[in-house]
Image 1 (tube, rainbow, N blue to C red):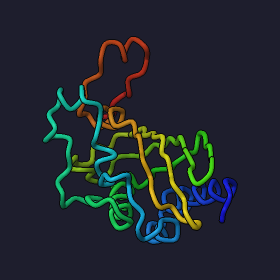
Image 2: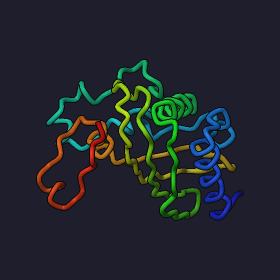
Image 3: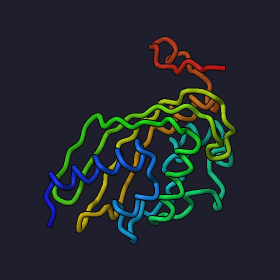
Image 4: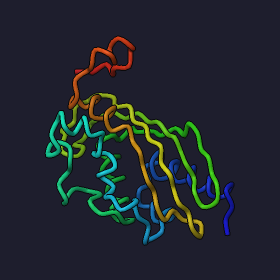
Length: 181
């Protein structure tokens, strides 16, 4: 049974190979065939923002259609959604900010940027640089990822894509993303 060091190495290699090297076909080498996403479709992790954002924009603008890539919560959905993200942000590069492992779980805080040059969940390419971040909890069994629960900064992505206005507080604190036109 792999230990925490091996589990952390698996997750580092997953991000390096699948995302940074764009080898999405290698995803099944890291994710078990019966792996899931905590009961949610992979696309829902990105488009499931805070209730106040849903109230402001309307759920229909935020929830992707069931036939979009990643609409299932299995390894195929994971692979489809990853491919969709990398096609929308082909220069995306993940940096692991922190990682903690205990038992069969690895918690990762990662950040990334990518230029939005392809359609992403119904939003046409904007050419904007989009900052992304998430805290993901991976569950590992027998050397493969069997589950992931992601907590992405959906509001940040939606703001960078132009779906949310800059708030006065964010502007005053310098937290706003400078939109490139």
